Image (cartoon, rainbow, N blue to C red):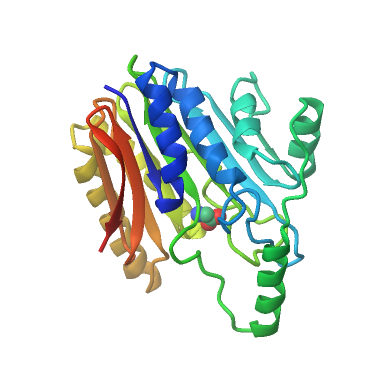
Length: 289
Ligand code: GLY
């Protein structure tokens, strides 16, 4: 069995490419990287890669991660500027013996040394969004995740049972310089173990990180829960917990797949979309109401 599941409609083209590869017995690492790169490269997605919206200093800072579910290798970049495909840098970092999570200038030096493509990631369209937002912003403007799209997070299973997870995001629009969200943080934005399954998150990183929600889903699947049961328990329990202790919970949407290709999704928002393809299911977009 093979399969791939991803947050948001914007992942459809990427997971379709990956599904074609998986059908021909490609590896889960290559397939997920291809799928995430497709989202990073598409300039009209405002929350990932090229065309991603900038921070408050009008700089596009990107976070990404890659995890191998066989070896549990993890590679991550945070607040990296001017590189086209952060997920590929994260994947290379996952193979290093140490120094697996690099941020800012350190991540850029590593990427440059290893020949990754430099690119000005700030598009004219993103600049226009920035200038419009500056005009609208007041002292009390709250930073919120995007509506209808945000981090792209994926879990992939190949026909040899190898699983991977990966994420990529430009994070919150107008975030402070140097702010890093949940997406490159293992256990929060993503987690995968080929002996069990994987999960990935989109939403308000600051809240997702309070609950290590992706890892919690893997833990529940390990106890025997289906991906859907695990997502429901992890997300709904944590959403309630945040509301009890803090009076509110930020946006949180989780996707999961186990090592049999069964999948599940839970969200605490209206209008969360996700995309999935398996050996038995053509690439399909679902909208959670
Ligand atoms: N979930 C993306 C972020 O908070 O940066």
